[in-house]
Length: 88
Image 1 (cartoon, rainbow, N blue to C red):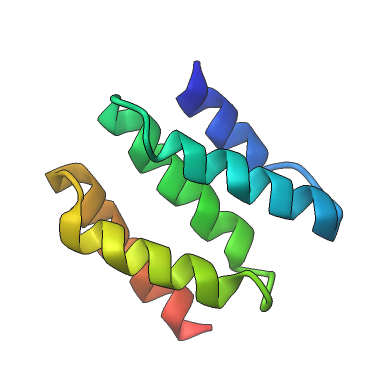
Image 2: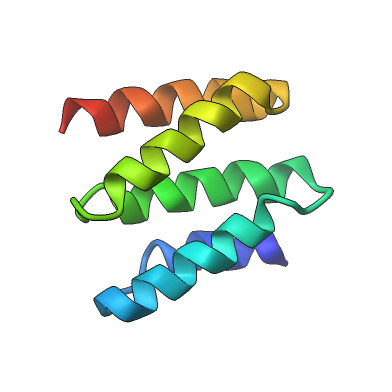
Protein backbone atom coordinates (compact mmCIF):
# COMPACT_ATOMS: atom_id res chain seq x y z
CA UNK A 1 0.00 0.00 0.00
CA UNK A 2 2.87 2.41 0.73
CA UNK A 3 4.02 2.51 -2.86
CA UNK A 4 0.53 3.59 -3.92
CA UNK A 5 0.54 6.31 -1.28
CA UNK A 6 3.95 7.51 -2.48
CA UNK A 7 2.52 7.85 -5.98
CA UNK A 8 -0.47 9.81 -4.69
CA UNK A 9 1.69 12.20 -2.67
CA UNK A 10 3.38 13.51 -5.78
CA UNK A 11 0.13 14.05 -7.69
CA UNK A 12 -1.59 16.34 -5.18
CA UNK A 13 -1.17 20.04 -4.47
CA UNK A 14 0.48 20.82 -1.13
CA UNK A 15 1.37 23.96 0.77
CA UNK A 16 5.09 24.44 1.46
CA UNK A 17 4.62 23.22 5.05
CA UNK A 18 2.66 20.16 3.90
CA UNK A 19 5.28 19.44 1.24
CA UNK A 20 8.01 19.33 3.91
CA UNK A 21 5.90 16.87 5.93
CA UNK A 22 5.36 14.70 2.84
CA UNK A 23 9.11 14.71 2.16
CA UNK A 24 9.70 13.48 5.73
CA UNK A 25 7.15 10.69 5.25
CA UNK A 26 8.75 9.67 1.96
CA UNK A 27 12.20 9.68 3.55
CA UNK A 28 10.81 7.32 6.17
CA UNK A 29 9.48 5.10 3.37
CA UNK A 30 13.07 4.80 2.13
CA UNK A 31 13.74 2.61 5.19
CA UNK A 32 11.01 0.14 4.19
CA UNK A 33 12.06 -3.43 3.39
CA UNK A 34 10.27 -3.32 0.04
CA UNK A 35 12.40 -2.23 -2.89
CA UNK A 36 9.32 -1.10 -4.80
CA UNK A 37 8.30 1.19 -1.92
CA UNK A 38 11.80 2.68 -1.93
CA UNK A 39 11.84 3.11 -5.71
CA UNK A 40 8.42 4.77 -5.84
CA UNK A 41 9.38 6.99 -2.90
CA UNK A 42 12.42 8.14 -4.88
CA UNK A 43 10.15 8.94 -7.81
CA UNK A 44 7.72 10.86 -5.60
CA UNK A 45 10.54 12.84 -4.00
CA UNK A 46 11.86 13.80 -7.43
CA UNK A 47 8.37 14.78 -8.61
CA UNK A 48 7.88 16.96 -5.54
CA UNK A 49 11.34 18.53 -5.85
CA UNK A 50 11.03 19.38 -9.53
CA UNK A 51 8.93 22.55 -9.11
CA UNK A 52 10.30 23.42 -5.64
CA UNK A 53 13.67 25.16 -5.82
CA UNK A 54 14.04 25.12 -2.02
CA UNK A 55 13.62 21.36 -1.70
CA UNK A 56 15.50 20.39 -4.86
CA UNK A 57 19.11 20.56 -3.51
CA UNK A 58 18.28 18.41 -0.48
CA UNK A 59 16.44 15.83 -2.57
CA UNK A 60 19.13 15.81 -5.27
CA UNK A 61 21.72 14.95 -2.61
CA UNK A 62 19.53 12.17 -1.25
CA UNK A 63 18.86 10.76 -4.73
CA UNK A 64 22.57 10.82 -5.54
CA UNK A 65 23.30 8.74 -2.44
CA UNK A 66 20.49 6.28 -3.14
CA UNK A 67 21.63 5.92 -6.75
CA UNK A 68 25.07 4.88 -5.52
CA UNK A 69 23.97 2.57 -2.70
CA UNK A 70 20.48 1.28 -3.52
CA UNK A 71 19.16 -1.83 -5.20
CA UNK A 72 19.57 -2.24 -8.97
CA UNK A 73 16.04 -0.83 -9.48
CA UNK A 74 16.83 2.18 -7.29
CA UNK A 75 20.09 2.80 -9.14
CA UNK A 76 18.38 2.66 -12.53
CA UNK A 77 15.50 4.91 -11.46
CA UNK A 78 17.87 7.26 -9.65
CA UNK A 79 19.96 7.84 -12.79
CA UNK A 80 16.85 8.86 -14.72
CA UNK A 81 15.56 11.08 -11.93
CA UNK A 82 18.89 12.82 -11.44
CA UNK A 83 19.22 13.51 -15.15
CA UNK A 84 15.74 15.03 -15.20
CA UNK A 85 16.23 17.16 -12.07
CA UNK A 86 19.69 18.43 -13.01
CA UNK A 87 18.41 19.78 -16.33
CA UNK A 88 16.17 22.27 -14.52
